[in-house]
Image 1 (spheres, chains in turn green, red):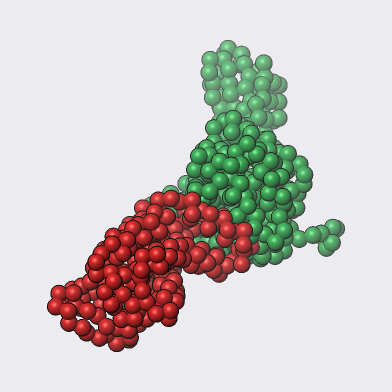
Image 2 (cartoon, helix red, strand yellow):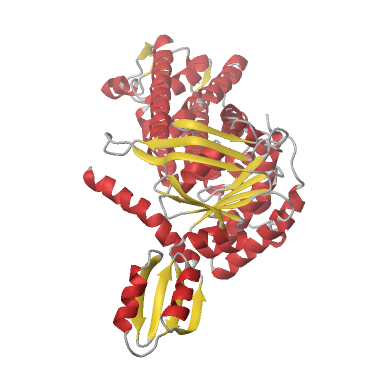
Length: 320
Length: 253
């Protein structure tokens, strides 16, 4: 209903493909292999996937740092380069280099000077928690401090979309927590945030929506709760009456919703896509007691969902 | 033209004392040792004296050290990720090149101004035209060697390689007839090396092409097209190499 009057999507990817020539030459690698995705303004989205899944390449195309081999990419309805030049899109890059021989403040001043309009330099330094380090050379800053500096640079144009490519890679636990605290405050202000990570807990605690990428394709897309449930993994466990363990297992394994059933002593554990059905069967037909249902971890969901794509990837490589 | 960015870039270079030593202090020292302090310094040479001949040579050496360093560092900083950072700003590649060129010219002006000032103080002599024109040629011609540094930076992608590029100018300086007057076969070979054309052009307003053989005093004349051709050919070689290396870098991306 609102579609006709809605503002353009923050990010719109249509059948996006990026191929790279390999060192050998003949077979180009499809780093991004047909991605369709729409991100609406205000969303906080995590790109989750193993290394080499195509996350960085996809984000590079969103930022106009790389051009697609085929397909289209727009940011706020415009070409990414133009959206970046207009200050609507900014990013904290995984491999964004800094000049080591200048100070934190000079770095911010330098990047600020390239924008016709930008936030106040000292204010941005304060928001990234760098005020006490402003006079320090970049080479003397820790990895976490340098990452906060990149964050400050990203805040300069006051962007509507902020892209973070593995923003906490190489940080220790407390630096990571500090970084996400700063980010939380920022995202609450209504900015669209897209971040790539392979830390599941980051995706879980910070994103509203998770896009899982493996082998250059989107393999899952939904809320954190949806992704979790996609794992064939809620575990239902119960104590069994002492006799007949073998026939109970046989009954459970015959159920179509059951992925796996195992026993340990008197206790049976069933991995299932339909925990309600299994729970009913256990309680009413099989005499189970002390029933417990554990919802699948994001980690197991991640493994289950990305496994086929990862398998296909290795197979393709093997056949070449 | 972004004054803040350019200003910060200049501050960066001036703060790098090691580079400043090789750009300004060392060539000035060379001038005093090999030029001003020598007895032959006051002997006539073309439209001036030998002191001025050495002065122009050393200013040229300092200027190319400056530009090759700046060209090389530009390549390295871009490849080490600063290029991606700048890719997230409205700054265009052409503006970046323009700012770097301004910085290169400004920095190469340092050895020129300081050594020419030393020249004034230590009795380097020449016609007004020779003073002004040689300084202009040294300044403008040094830009070719920004490409030389750029090629090294693009090819080897490290700060050490850029240092090596600037250092290699000492060798090219000897081979190019900058530090020590060559004669015979060595002089013939020198005409094919990259610094020969540049420094010969810079001295042309003084020497008008006359070369004195320091061994037997024989005077030979060299037409203007020789150094011009040398500079043009090397400029094309450096430019083609730089473009090829940039393309190779893109394809690899």
